[in-house]
Image (cartoon, rainbow, N blue to C red; front, side, top):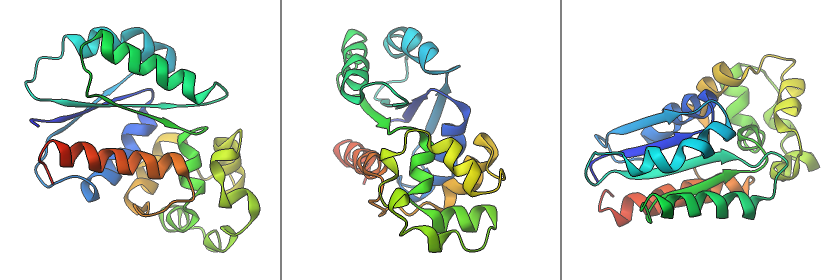
Length: 189
C-alpha cells in the first residue's frame, strides 16, 4: 500500500483521525484526507474521486455518519459507488448515529481532552453504555460538556485520547477493526 486515503463528510472527522491514526497505523504510512462539504457532497463526488485517483496501490476508507437514515442502505449505496469506481477493496464505515457517539463511548477520553473532571464517572449511565443508540449524540455531548465541545476543536482534542480497544460504540470498534484488517491485508502490519 502506497498510502491510505480517507474520504470524509466533514472536517471534524479529519480532526479526530489526525489524533487517532498515529496509534493505529504503521509508522511512516502516508495518510491523505479528502474532506467533502457534507454527506450529499461526499456521495455526489465519490465515484469520480475514487475512479480518477492516480496514486498506485493507494487504499481507501470512506467514513460517513448514519444520522437518521438506514445504516445498511447507506453502506450499500457507498459500496455500490466504490464498485462503480472499480475500487472493490475500499473500506466503507458508518458512524452510528454521528461521530460524537464514539466520544460518548469513551468519556474518560473526553474528560482528559476537554479537562472536565468527573465525566468518566458517568460512563455507567445507561445512555452512555450504548451511545450508538442515541439519536443526537452531538447535542448530548455538547450538553454533557457544558457547551465546551465544539465539532472540529473538540474532535481534534479527543482523537488522541480515544481508547482503541473500547467496544461501547460498536461502530467505533468496527471502524478500528476494519482499519487494522485493511492495513494487515496490504502487508503494512
